[in-house]
Amino acid sequence: MSSRDRRHFFARLVLALVVGAAAALPAPSLAAAPTPGPTVETTAAREADGVDLARRAGGRSIGRLEARASTVSLAEPDELDLRLGQIRPFLDARIAAERAAAEAAARAAAEAKAAAEKAAAQKAAAPTYSGKNHFWIPSLGLSRSVETFACTRSTPPANRVYRWGCAGANNVYLFGHAWGVMKPLHDAYVSGRLKVGMTTVYADGNGRVRTYRVTEIRVVTPDVVDWAIAAQAVPSMTLQTCVGANSDRRLLVRLVAD
Image 1 (cartoon, rainbow, N blue to C red):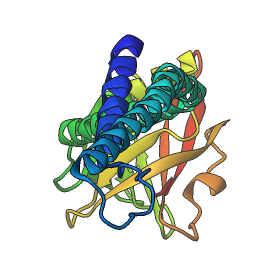
Image 2: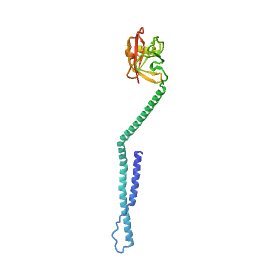
Image 3: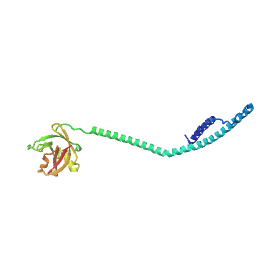
Image 4: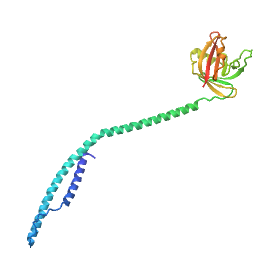
């Protein structure tokens, strides 16, 4: 409603109240105290005078109320506009804050949904490992079956990944040729991609699958074997292959089970 419409509305309201109030005003009695035996003409004249005086008194009252109505109709809408102007910044700020909170909640819900969907997709896409006597290095694309190499064996190894029987307890010792089955491991070391924290997966002869994580990398001469084959306090793995221009060094990688 515009300011002009509000003024008209207040004016009509006040005028209605004025008319109702005027109609309800008692006509003041200005007649003198009755005297014995008044004539008809005297009584009628007095009544006519009283009505005229009452009408004039009522007219003055209506005039005052109309003046008041005019004042109210002009002043009150302006005052209302002033008050609305004073509280509007607070209302606007409240609305803006609620809108911002709703938008933030919607963004958080969308981000949580996206994260959950991404995690579900990654889980669905993650490879699963199963089998017996098998070895994987996922980051290097290495996947090989594992054969047993007895500690007493004297024949040289073929191009296979072997589990050496000379290693101590809690030490799954796997080795193979750098030019063959262990080439991905050799190349990762030479290029600097072999890092602590890299994972391998091993399925033993009973089908138990475990993940191991690289904790240490060493390059030694062939005669240094004590550290490599030593028993370990926790489930561990040792990887061995050759390295060097003439394959005269041994690359040893120690891992611990997750």
